[in-house]
Image (cartoon, rainbow, N blue to C red; front, side):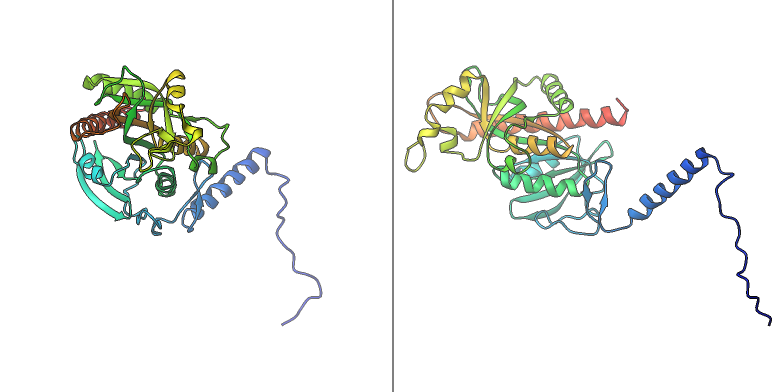
Length: 315
């Protein structure tokens, strides 16, 4: 075979005849192809720019993977694991079933008009709440409603009333790990809207306003029924101060949830049932607890149903 000393000619690959519009289209195609391929990788970026885990990987604390959650975007977050099943079997939930229960984190899956919804307990306080929200977000959840109980500090609020939180006093520590203290802990406006709409529709007495989230149940809420009965100087008189600033209630999770959701580009809301009124007695009765829990569950489930229907209809 004869071998030429000249290099073999190559086809002309110059783009002189390609328009600028064609180049743009080629670029878009390449980027789109890269994204499709990237979805198969273990860790990808979602549209908000946050990393989402592989669907097969099990979250450390919740014990869930993306294969368990049916693509759920919505989550109701009670604190008490015992409240999870009660919520999950409340109409209009269908096909409720338990997915996992590790430590304080218990999760059920149910469907509202065909839309998957997770109900996950957070335990008490900001640190465990932050874990639940973080790991649910990794699984694709972007809308969170806390379903809790609370102690009211305003004289016109009664046991069994429902409080829809618009913003929270950040008297916690977990939230500052996500944003500086100057960052506001505010509820997403759509969640406030549907929670108020649900309470009205159900005829529940409700109040809308600011909540104080404390890291502690006893000193941070100026309770005298603690072991020592002593309230540190920092918290002495604080309840009257919050009352004068028109804060409605004490609880322990809203500030962490709302700060996280705002900082991470998620949607957060909070509704609580009043189980005690801080007018002298610190005692929480079984009757008050039952009434507060029943009303807040009704309000939260109906609110989520309203939201699911609105978003399914494109409203």
